Amino acid sequence: MRLEQSLFGTTFQNPVLLAAGTCGFGREVQGVVDLESLGGLVTKSVTLEPRQGNPAPRVAEFGPGMINSIGLANPGAERAAGEKLPWLGANLGRARVFVSVAGHTAEEYVSVVETLEPEDGFLGFELNLSCPNDARLQGLPFALEREALSRVIREVRARTERPLLAKLAPNDPDPGATARAAEEAGADGLTLVNTLPGLVLEPETGDPVLGAGSGGVSGPALRPLGVWAVRRARRGTSLPIVGAGGISATDDALQYLRAGASLVQVGTASFADPRAAARIVAGLAAWGRRRGVDSVKALIGEGPAAGEARPGSPEPVPDPVPVAE
Ligand code: RRO
Image 1 (tube, rainbow, N blue to C red):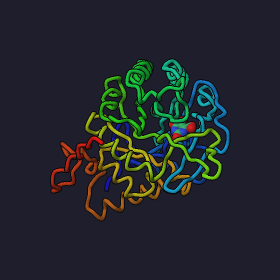
Image 2 (cartoon, rainbow, N blue to C red):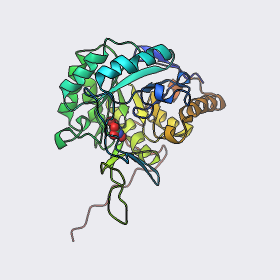
Image 3 (cartoon, rainbow, N blue to C red):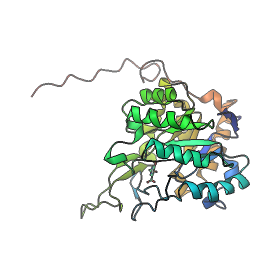
Image 4 (cartoon, rainbow, N blue to C red):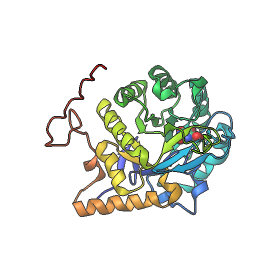
């Protein structure tokens, strides 16, 4: 199976990328991950000013997943431009790089993008509009307020011709409508999904396991929600979609492709096994060979035109009308 994907004015040698926040700026994982064997990577989110991040512990495991509250620890836009991007430019030729951008206001996103824009070493921006650990004035992330989301994308769009991905949230009741809003505002693609807000407590004491309290849930527990969101977004827009959320094996990547993603990102799985993404690349190639599938493109699903029913299933039974007590 041919794994290349032509998107965003370039070719990805395969559809598997490392997700934002799981590989630093690439250099941090050199020696453990063969970055040049992957489709690419997304950097840690960059903010205008440097950030120290949240108090430890910043990460904890629970049954089917992980919860984190890193708190956007990053060197800030100036140092990202001066110290991080040059390494990427000098060391990566085949893997494509998106720089993740975050902020509290549209103006902050614009300033970060204007600082990074003149540099080499990357293809485009992934606008992180959905961080669960950095609420805007105690409000919702941009991805859950359509007007605010559109404004950030529009303002950034006016300053760069590089490919722009909008990273959306999993706790969105209508990912199709959000996807359309992002498209209308000028995004070139969508990444779905970020982590899901959550809270894990010590049962004995009631204290949160994370230093910051609540955090973002990732790993296998997030996967069905991510696949659902991708399928909903697929129906709401024609933009290319990058699927993320609980991908740790070839079958997981296949689900996202079938749901309508053109590329996938591996995140949490890389912490347990830094070779997870490379394993999935090899797994997809082997799967396609066994099934006689020509190219990844042939797998990318549109989903049934209406409803979610499995082909051949009877019509779903409607929810019962609640009976008044
Ligand atoms: O840094 C973080 O705590 C963080 C970010 Br910016 C994000 O987008 N998603 C996440 O789970 N953690």
